[in-house]
Image (cartoon, rainbow, N blue to C red; front, side):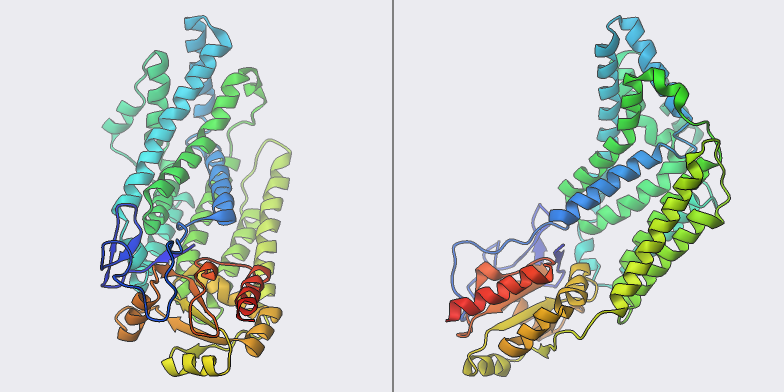
Length: 450
């Protein structure tokens, strides 16, 4: 996840990506000593690759879980019965039923996706603002505040006039569309805090298309169970009865928001404090969801569900603590200086320059995983000069000059210089890379020099 920088000589294009001032897109002229290429390395979006896939799967699962909250679950029989009644009136059975279900999901998607796009547009500057610790603390505090609602400490209430307008019934396909459009209003006391917390996170990324995709995925998770139940409405009687287990599901979503808050606050903690904080949140969530919470249900699988969630959280906490405790010696970095680059050319050694910030999650992941891998450390010590440029705080003249010189659009960015001091732009890295693949890039720059 490349995090966009917010220095004074940067502006953002309509798509949310910063570009250096000069000719309107990249920097005015190529930096001295760098090879000119027709194509510039492109930074990925705030989420890419497997991170995007797992994030969307998690959001989809979260959308499905929202159906089990006390405000949505009782609506399932009503909604499915409405679909069935409309299909009977229009006399086309399953075909009409599918149409009503799709209209309902379309209504959900329109409302939520619009929220996601608006949040990303209004929060487009937060990518740079996330350099500010105060912003990170405020975002985390907002997420924790919304989580307390899901824990039952307070309840979100909308004006009665808005709620009454939302529950108004219409016939035909428009009625199904309207039900999807207004579900968020009706179920706001339960799903509102989670959705608002997710909006806060989407706003921090400042990418409209990601805002759309994330909330469209949430809508699919929220609407798909209702759609399937409408198709097989005879299975409604097999659903478990409403009960205390729905409070447990709402609490689960609250812990998700607390975990997101820990994710935002993690870069501010020194050393491995961020990892320890996330592990403690997972430990607390596991104990609470698995054993402390006394919610009951009238179906036999519920105790197993609680225990499984608790054990999963405890395993995550144990993994985080173990990975931290067993972490070996990391790469030895040197601060940037022209003399160091000259020294590297004299020694005929390639140079790796890591543009890094403590508030950048993939930067931290690179540092904790890739740059602590024994093979990477061995290669770095024997064959490379390793340089780190810390751009955590804006305003450093040297850092701003280096950001322009190397056309750095965001962090992390890792630049590979050959033994002649010229960048291998085909090897430039703008995201997290696991150790084995990073070793491939190290081998690539050495192979070219032979």
